[in-house]
Length: 503
Figure 1 (cartoon, rainbow, N blue to C red):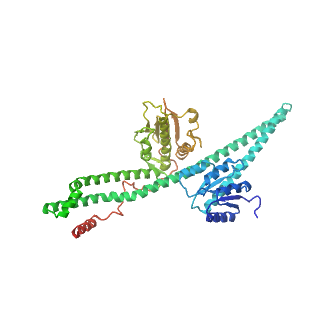
Figure 2: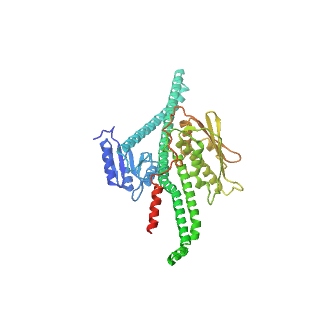
Figure 3: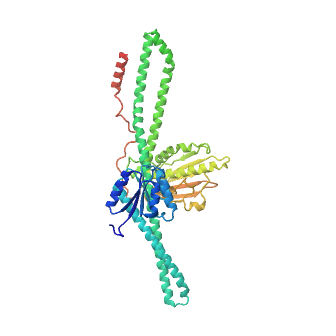
C-alpha cells in the first residue's frame, strides 16, 4: 500500500487495451495509483467518485472524443482543477492549440516513450501541487488581511508599539504578494515557451519534410529535361532524313502521320518542353524558399541575409496575398537597403516575420469585409535599413484598420488577442517579442499610423554576443544538382539508337 503522502492517483482514458495495459504497468511501477476507462462516458462517471490527481486522455475515441470530455471536465467546478494531458497521433499544431485552448495542460504524441510520459506526469503533478500550495497561501494571506483590517479599528485606541507591529505586518503581506505574483509570471512564461517550442518544431519539420520530398523528384526531372530535348531533336532530325530519302512512305505510315499531325507536333513539342522547364524552375524556387524558411538543415545560429527570410515568408503567404471574394489583392511593396549579414536564429526570426505578416493580412481582410473601404487599396510595405554599424531595423507597415491604444499596450502579453474566439490564441506576438528581445537582444515596437494602419519595427544587432558559428553552410537547392538518378547521356543515346534500329 502507498502512504497517503506519496500516493498520486492517475486516471487513464483510452479505447486501446494495449495502451491502457502498458501505461498502467509503467505508472504503477513508479508508485502511482491508477484507474482506467475505455471511453469518455465511463471516464466522466469515474471522475465523479474517483477524484484523480491527473488524467491521461486519448483524443480519438468512439462516441465522445477527448476534446468533449475535457470540455465537460473544465465546465464542472468539482473537476476543473484536475490537469488533463492529451494523448493522440494527431501531431499538427492546430489540434495541439485546440486541446490547450479548452483547458489541457500538455500534449503527448503517439507513439509515445514511457520515460516521456512518466516525466510529463511528474512535472504536471508537481505543478498541480504548486498551484494547490499557491491557493493555500492565498487563503492564508486573505486571512491575514482580514485580521489586519480588524486590528486597524483597535489600533486607533492602541499605543505606538501596536502601530509599529501593524507596519511590519503590512510589509510582510506586500512581500508575500510580490513573491506570488513573480511565481505566477514565471509559470506563464514557462508555459508560453513550451508551446512555442512545440509549434516551431512541428512547423519546421513539416516544411523541411515537404521540401525534401519535392526536391528529389524535381531535381531528377530538371536534370533530365536537357537530355530529353537533345533526344527529341535527334529523333526529329531522323524523321526529317526519312522524309528526305523516302518521300513516299507506306500507306499505313502515311495514315499514322496524318492522324498525329506531325507538322503541329514538330512546332508544339519544343514549346511544351520549354513550359516544363519553366515549371520545374518555379518548383525549385518554392522548395528553396521552404528550406530557407524552415532552416532545419543549418546551424541554429548563423550569418544570414535578412531579405532571404522575408522573401521566403512572402512566398509561403502568396496565396493569401492574392486576395479572394471578399478582399482584393494585397500589394506588397519592398524597400530594401544594403544590409550586412546578421548572425541570428534564422528559423525563429522567420517565424517572427510570419506572425507579423499574417496579422497584417488578417487586419486587411477584416477591413475589406467591413464594406466601408471606398477607394482604399490594401497594401503591406516592408522596409529595411541599417541603424548603426552593428544594428539593423525591419519595418512592416499595413494600411488595415489599426490597433486601438488600449489593445496596443497589451499586444505582447501572453494569451492576449484582439481576434474573435477560435481565430487566435494570443501567443504569436508574445512569442515574437520574446524571440526578438531575449533571443536576439533587440527590440520589437508597435505604433499606430495616420489615418489608419499599424507599423511594427524590429531592431536587432548584427552579431549575438556569445553565439558561435555553426557548421559550414550546405549549398542551397539552386547550387546543388541532383545527379544520383540522372542516366549517363552516352549510354542513353546508345540505348535509344538500338531501339530505333530494332524497330
